[in-house]
Image (tube, rainbow, N blue to C red; front, side, top):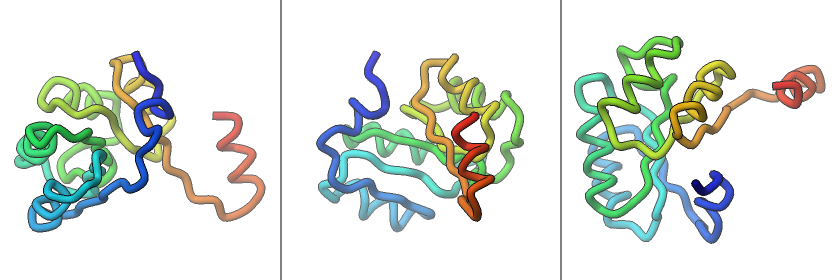
Length: 123
């Protein structure tokens, strides 16, 4: 299996979408990777499906999907109910779960000081 770095190699632009209008624009754009930064339990599978049907990679920001919790079951839901390639989250536990489930995982963090940077390195 490819690493996330290998998967993104050569990717110059990653589209990030918050709604269906932006998704339609991203699908016809040259971007080969699309981050979903919104949606809900009701439409995330359809959004991911549209991305995958366009031959592009879909990465779901778990923390921004309405109706998902910050528990491991959120990763399980994405894995079971969508064809997403990976997730984005601020939660280290969910990154681990995503990797265990064969998904790419991006841990988002907010660097406000050197302590935050040190904590990120430990995770």
